[in-house]
Length: 73
Image 1 (tube, rainbow, N blue to C red):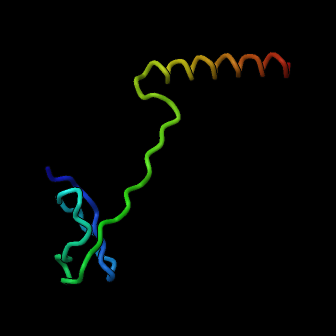
Image 2 (tube, rainbow, N blue to C red):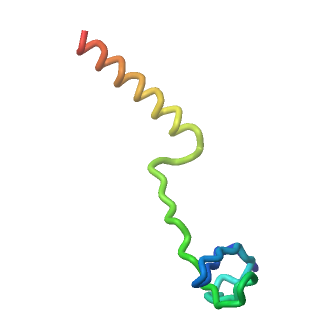
């Protein structure tokens, strides 16, 4: 199964390629130099992305803001 990865050569050319997951080096299509697979950006989530959690966060935030307004008035 092929997956998309970014490869970068020493001349700074970045290309997206579909390769097998174990592939670490390819030839740059622009300059012919060896290009190496780049480390993908880390993924992090602070909450679930199912919509329910987001709604709960909005309700909690509104409640917190109402308490702050009441305390400051």
